Length: 471
Image (cartoon, rainbow, N blue to C red):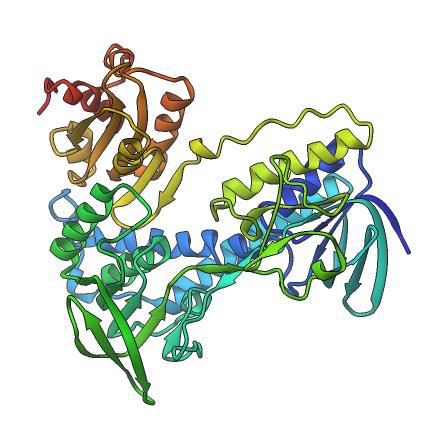
C-alpha cells in the first residue's frame, strides 16, 4: 500500500489541474486514470478539444465559396469536398499531442500516475484496478470522474446510425441527412459542423428556442442565422417520440409544433450529459449523492472527511474551466488543512463565462435579461449589431450582435451576451467588465482600438441610451 498526501481520481481538466496544484504546494500526489488512451479525460479525448478541431475544419470549409470575393482566384470550388477521414486523423493528432502535454506536466510536477479504475473504499483508501488490483492510502482525495452522454429511452445509441457525441467525433462518412435531438451547446455545435460540411441537418428541440439556458435573444438569433445561411430545418417545441432503425437509415416520428416523420441517414442524440458516480465507491463514504450528483460545500468538500468532489459530478456548470477552477480550490483547501501555505479563493459561479462554438459563436457571462428581471432589477438593454463594424466586414462575418443587460437605477452591467464572430474570445472582455463592476457610463468612456470587434462593447453601452454612434 502506497501512502500519498493527495490522490485525485480522474485526469480531466479538473483532475489533472488539481493534481498539479497539489504537487506545487508540496503534497505527495497521485492521479488515477482508467482510460487506456491516456490522461486528459473527456474534454481532451471525447469532448472540448476534438469537437473544436471539427469546428475549425468546418469553419474554414464554409468560407471556401467566398475565396473569389476575397481576391483568391484559380480554385475550383466545385471540386472541393469534406474528407472526414482526414478530419478525424487531424483531430487524433491534436488529441495525442495534448495528451502527451498532460503526461509531461505530471512528470514535471512529480505526480504519480496510477493506471486503472479508481474506487473509494472509505477511511482514505482508494482501490485501483488495472493490470493488478492495488490499494493506496491518502490523507485527502479529490473525486473528478466527469460525465458521459445521456441516453434516451427507446433511442439507445449504437455508434452506427444512432450516435452520441462520442461516436460522431470518429465518423468517416458524411451523413446525407443528420437529425440532431437536442439544441444545447453540443447539438448546435455539431449542427453547424455538418451543415457546413455538406449534410442536410434537422435540429429538434423540446424547448421553445435553441440554447435554452442562454439569454433568449441568443437562441432566437442563432436559429435565424442557421436557417438562412445553412438552410437548416429547425424544429423547436418538438420532440422525437419513436425511432425505427434500418440498415441504411433511421426513421424518426416527431410530435409538437413541427410534427411528422423524418427519414435520415443518422440520428445524433445530444440531450446533455450525466455524472459518472456509479461504481466509484461513494456508498462506502458519508458523501451525499442526489440523482448522481455529489453534495459539496463552497470548498468542494463532501460530507466524507477528507473527500472532495469537483467538475461534472457536482451541481455546478458542466464546463471544463469550471472544473479546473474547482480543482485548484479543492487542492489548495486540502493543502491548507495539511499545513501548507495555501489560500483558496471563493469561486464566483455568477461570473462563469459560457462558450458555444457553433457558427456563429455564442459567448455569455452574467445575468440573462429574464434572470435580471426575476431578481427585481429595473432592466435596460443595449444591443449593437456587428454589421456596421469595419472589422466584421473585413473578416467576412458581419452578423450577430452584442446584448448588454444593465440595471437602470445604478447603471451596473449585469450581463453581456454575444452572438457573432469570435464571440468565444470576446467573452473574456465581457468577463473583465463584470469583474471590474463597470457601469454603462464607464464602458462608454472606455477607449477601444480600431478596427476591432471589441468596438461593439462601448457601442452596446451607448445603445442603452439610444445613442450608438455607428448604428
